[in-house]
Every structure is written in structure tokens, then in C-alpha cells.
Length: 189
Image (cartoon, rainbow, N blue to C red; front, side):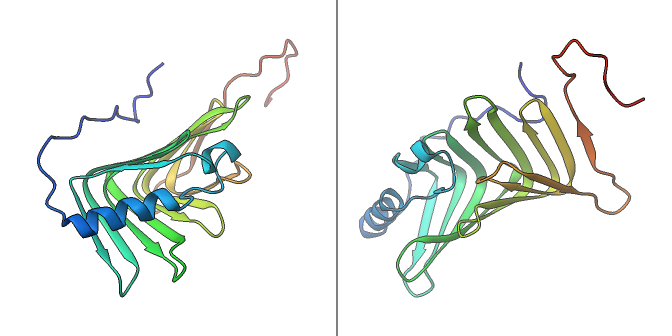
């Protein structure tokens, strides 16, 4: 069943990317050498990282790499799409954090074979590589193991699969849980 709030990926245009050969080589080597989402499934961390974008820039001085134009990052079962993604690197060239923005930015990952795919979307997605926490901010939605969470801010742990949703302004957090598959008639009464 197609989720009404997670759009299908659009095809990237075939416009020529205006990136210097040195920058393109450096960006590709950097991405292929780094375990972008090391807290995803163990098999994901061993997979290659693939990035598609219309434009890429890298600053050697700050360690910041920016991608724009229909950005898609995949590594194993993990996928993130956004209008723009900025990656902050440590001096050792490992990823400290990544920030994705879009209308909306999306992420998805196979949590486990039993739990299936977790899918999220928001105006902004912050990934902290050190803690393994993804923070979805602004019209945030997350679907995991049949349950859906909506609020202004959702924090999702790639390590544990834990979810924390926070309301904002006049908004309230919305949680929807699927019915139990057991035959017992337990529930809220």
C-alpha cells in the first residue's frame, strides 16, 4: 500500500553537472570511503554509498560538503532524498553529521526483517552520526512497524528503533497503532 505522505522518488534530470573533475573525484572518493549510516543494519554499513545530485561543492578548510538538486543518497537499505544535503566531516574525514532539507526531505531504512521498513519525512532531517539519532523537524511523520507518528519534531534512533515525537504550537502529537493480531479482546476501555 502506498503511503499518502511519502512521495515516490522523482527521476533526476539529465542536466550536465558543473563540478570540477578534482572536486567530483574527491567527493566520490570521500563518499565511497565513509560508512555514512554506520548505525543502520550491519549489512548496510558494509555497502557502497551512492549519491546523486545536480551540484556538489566541498570546502577543504571547513570539511563541509553540500549537495543540491534532487539529492538521493543510498547505502544498503538506507535511502535519503532531499532538495539539499550538507555533510560535516571530521578532520579524519568521517561524517559527524548530515542535514537534509526539502519539500519534504525523506528517509527510509529496513530496521529488521521482522519490523520491516521505517519511513520518515519532514522539512528538515538532521542525522547525528555519533549518536545514530535522526531528528525530523517541521511537519514530521514517521511510519515504523505498522505504527505512524506525526508531530513537529520526531527523534528516531537508528540503533534501537526508538521514537520520540514532540508537538509544536497549537499542534498535538498523533500516534496511530495497528490493531493487534491476537484473538484476545484487549485494548483501551
